[in-house]
Image 1 (cartoon, rainbow, N blue to C red):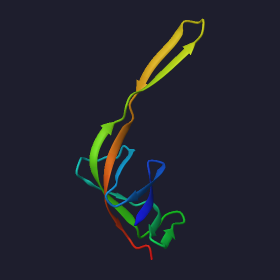
Image 2 (image 1 turned 45 degrees about the vertical axis):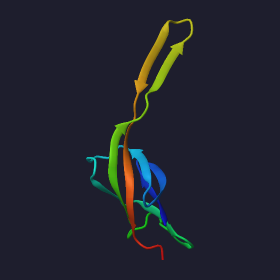
Image 3 (image 1 turned 120 degrees about the vertical axis):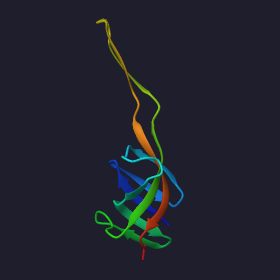
Image 4 (image 1 turned 90 degrees about the vertical axis):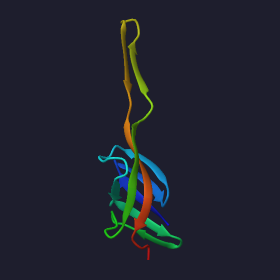
Length: 106
């Protein structure tokens, strides 16, 4: 059984036991998070597609880690002008462990 969920403006395919890295969510490590925007639920040959979401289905996950990604360097330069700008950025993320998918695909 798997589901397609939407969080942080992106869509992810999840199944029970998966680890998922999403945009930062509020909460402490060990807290349960409900992902209610389920777009599709599939169980073998039974598939339900939401229009746009499935109302009676949710994905329960637990926050495994709150962190920041690798640094990305932004470098701007204009030739012959002496203009150079160097900036760095680290995107925050939340790692989720998918506990269960609540709902039926029938």
